[in-house]
Structures are given as structure tokens and as C-alpha cells.
Length: 429
Ligand SMILES: C[S@@+](CC[C@H](N)C(=O)[O-])C[C@H]1O[C@@H](n2cnc3c(N)ncnc32)[C@H](O)[C@@H]1O
Image (tube, rainbow, N blue to C red; front, side, top):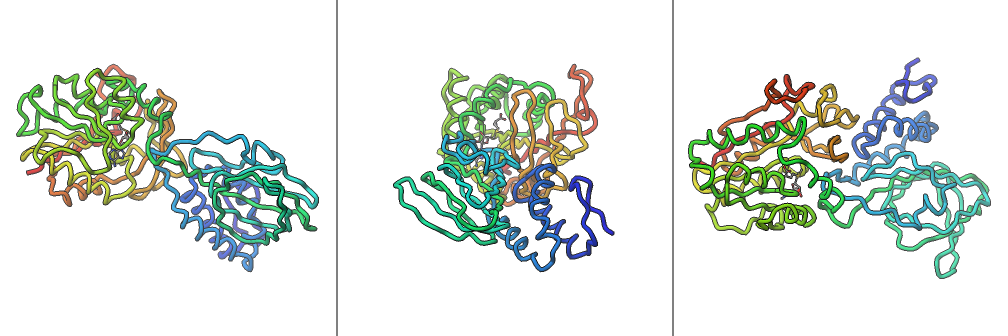
């Protein structure tokens, strides 16, 4: 008999390869498409168990997997969280809505309703994938008092976000059982005020691991062959966020630094923290500046916020355009080894299931301890960034991996052996 990992809390009787394969496919789908944790996987697999263990019922699993991939959920760090409306199903009809998993991006509900059960009026505000595992017939009461009846058979259904509350009565003869994978689509696809405000709390030099992100930047700027004295440089901080990187550049004595970002809320925070208000909201990859304006461009933790390779190339091309000949682009990002779940970092937690064996462009999860902020950032290999720069006619001058040193006066964990960040220096010559 083949055994499943202990997390499933049960064994598959007389399992054969088709069943085992389906378990693996299903688990992969839950990890990849919904970024769920092991506990939720276990709970969801239990609900699907009768279908998983009967090869004749695998079509519903296949349908679920296909539709889950088609949802193409964007776990981008720049998504915000909408407040839970009071007419939400979990609030108004908790008996019929058990939360199996909840993250800023996804909520997975389990609902079971006995014949005769009446669910109070409620709404599901997010679009969802509903998997009906046991069907029944329902009577639905709309807000205007009108009543409709509908049969809900076994199957996988894509449901749009609801706009009005509906009351349900199970008028069938069977218990109704369903899983609902709700996708928390946000009205804005950019950093919202909550994240922007937390981000603005990061100290200028950064504590712990984050200190290594800027520690060596000054030296890297000096090393660039075409860099004249720092005060005379004209610099753009692309994706400046709450202005931490911009203010850092200014602290080096650079007088002319412009900060640009696609997030209004981030720019608002940047303006609050800097008496010089030279921050601007832009569209991605479009900077309102003439060709050859800047000596130096910095992109500090911006590529991790972009899940599309072409977008990175487009931004690099725009930066190349506005850099003076011989200008420098410094691109600071999380290193490949950052995501290794075995690494222990002073300031981050990153040992989440979805970070195992990431592929380029994949959303990976991290938690910044000091500001209590969980982000879903994109994993890119060093080579992806270098290739995008090549496409933009930027040539690689150097790649730097800052390691923790004794003189940093920080009790390092893995930082002294493995670099959490990569800093690329590109030239537009
Ligand atoms: C992690 S924050 C880094 C902020 C700042 N550079 C720092 O180091 O503190 C990433 C920033 O990149 C911005 N961003 C993401 N995609 C962008 C794009 N396509 N163009 C410009 N900015 C972008 C986000 O809005 C966010 O403010």
C-alpha cells in the first residue's frame, strides 16, 4: 500500500498510481494557484477525498485544476486588502461558512447545508470558484422579496462577485456540500495605504538584514567609471515607494534626486517624510523626462514587485533612454539564495511552502519582522534580470552580493555566509 504524507491524516486504501498522481496534481494546484498552507491542503484534500479515490470521478478534479489555473491569480505585493463588508457570508451565516484558509488574496470556505436549512441573507463579494461536491435544490430570496428556485448539481462553477445579499433555503432532499475558492480581487492593483504606511516605518538605513541592502551602494556608485562627485549627480529613484531609498541617496550628499512610483499611496507617504516634494506618480515604464537626463538610476526592490518579464525590460529601456551616455543603473533585489527555505535571516521569514523550488516570475511569500508586513514578491533568477537589461541595451558592469560583516555590529544569522540581496550595476554604454 502506498502512503501519503502524514499531513493528510489518512491513508489511501489500495492506492494505485492514478490516484496517487491525482493527489500530487491536486496538491500542486493548491500550492501553485492558491498559495495555501499545509493545514488547509490537508482539510481541502479531505473534502475532495471521495472524488480523488475514485478514478471514475476524476473529471471534477481535472475541471477544478484547469479552472484554478485559468483564474491566474496575481499574488503581487502591490495588492491591498479590502475591508470585510458586514453582509459577508461568514458574518451573516457563519454556520454555513467555515473558513478553511484566509490570506490577503484568497479565502477558501467550506459550506454544508442540510435539507430544510435556511441561510440568512448574505453576500459573497469576491468572484469565486465553487466546487459542489454534493448537490441539492435551493430557494433563493432576493432583496426585493422575489423568490427563485435553482438546482445546484455536482460540478465546478465560476461565480462572479455578488452585489446584493440573497437568502438561501435548501429545499432538496440531500445535504448540500461545497467548497468556495474566493479570489479577493482588489479595486486597485497597487500598494494601498495600509502597506504604504507600514513601508514608511522602515528606518532609513534599515535594521538587521535590511541594513545590507544599502550598506555598499555608495561604494558601488563611486566605482562606476563615469561617476563624478556625488553632490553633482542627477539621480532618479525608480519605484521609490515611501521614499526610503530616495532619502538614503540624499543622505549621501546627492542633491538632485527624483522619486517616481506607480503607487499614489506610496508617493503620498514619501511626500510626508521629505520636505523636498520631488516625488511623482507615474505609469509603469513611462518617465516624463527628456532623453539623457540622469547620471544614475536606482531600482531598489522594484523587480520583486513585478511579475512580468516584459514589464521589467520595458522599464529598463525607459531608464536607458533617460540615462546620460555612460550613466549607471543600480538594481537592488532579493538574491536567489534569499528564498531558500533553509536560510535564517535576521529580519525576514521566508520558509513558506510556495517558496520551495520557485520558478522565474513566481510569487513567493516573505514576512518583514520589524514592520509586521507580509508580502508576496516575485522570484527572479539573476540571469532573468541580466537578460532583461541586455534586451534594453544595458551592459552588466558588476554583480555584488553583500555579506554580513563583524564590523556591522549586528548578530548575523545566515547573512555572513549567504547574501540575501543582489546588486547589479549596469551601464548604458
Ligand atoms: C518594495 S517597494 C520598494 C520601495 C523603495 N524603492 C525602497 O527600497 O524602500 C517596491 C515599489 O515599487 C513600486 N513599483 C512596482 N511596480 C512598479 C512599476 N512597474 N513601475 C514603478 N514602480 C513600481 C511599488 O509601487 C513599490 O512602491
